Image 1 (cartoon, rainbow, N blue to C red):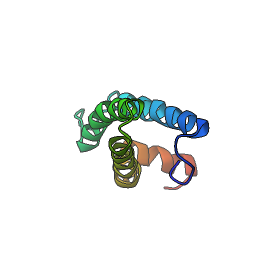
Image 2 (image 1 turned 120 degrees about the vertical axis):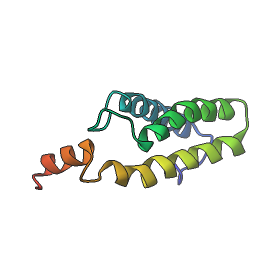
Image 3 (image 1 turned 90 degrees about the vertical axis):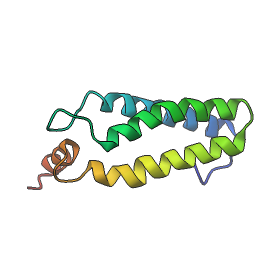
Length: 105
């Protein structure tokens, strides 16, 4: 998305798909509490995503491209670059599932 030309039909459809998937992941994370039954700071990021994604889409539709760009870039950095490695930490459920699927102890 970042390397492709903005405003094209491809950009719009990839963007819509990415927004829907981000919302699905964020909302489904609330069904997975931590081992102690409580939510972690990563769930706080999920709450932010459920607010920021619709606002970013709304910003694009209303022509506020700078706000749209900032929100989407922030969601990418926060969701994938920052939270991703923490979600795969050995003590977390997702990290355990990935290591089990790869056959790593």
